[in-house]
Length: 397
Image (cartoon, rainbow, N blue to C red; front, side):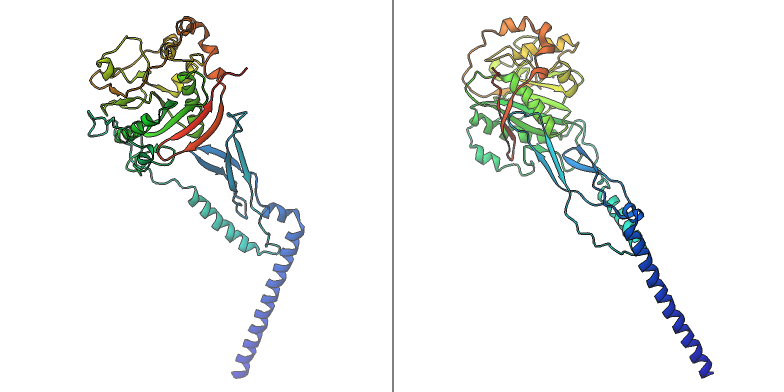
């Protein structure tokens, strides 16, 4: 019995040894073949040619899964354009330097790694649970007060921690129904800017919209061109995020009722119909100045604002004619809601050419506006409560 048992054990040990040697030989054979064959190159070649897609400030990679799994792409750089061509963007994508330590891998190991990579990739790209939509009409809206007291911009910049860098905000409790860019033409109004930001952020946050505030400052000493700055604001804000609605806003006007929703209806909306310094009366029916709202489609369809209005006045009436020409009509809230307070400021000299320009609007608007816009970005700064864009809009010689 002992001899028979010992013989069986010895045979089992020999068989086990042969099996180990056979497995080692198979590993060596497969490793050598794959190392030297095009098949190994196909199976284990890292993939560097992925397609980048820009959407909502996130880089989404379209990945093709091979047996080995995919190699990550890093060092994504979004480079602003040179001053000579502000409309150009450069996306630099580079791959990391990886060492290849898979000279003789086990096939089964590679398959398991591929399965692991597949699971990781799916988890990385899984959508986060979505929040419920915000109310169409948020609660607790109504008349509000305004504080015109002078304050320091640095002090205001330290307030409202819920606002993200660049003056971007969206509610953490619900998904906004509207994405709105607030475009503010600006020059030499720092005191107004502080009051404006201190008033507008809490006002807009109560409306549960996703918004960003863009201050477009004109460099140099040329006459102020409000309309051209708003064209620049439209283009530059849209390059940063996919906004649906654009509120073109004078910095010296502060809304007095939060029911005045900063959203875009089906027709362009004149927001500031009722201003305190105008005795809360509409000066004339066709007015479209102060604060106005247009969708992306509406603004592009009329070719934006004219670029020709240097000095005060005319550009808002020009926009009214453009909208009318494209069969839009002006929407307004009732006067008890569309109420604004105006900050004190020195009046600018009227543009002597405004009436002549207005007489030509219906014939020239398709050749004067976004399609002919030229400007030079000097500097873009993402402050806490706003994005500041300093721009040279002087006409080229």
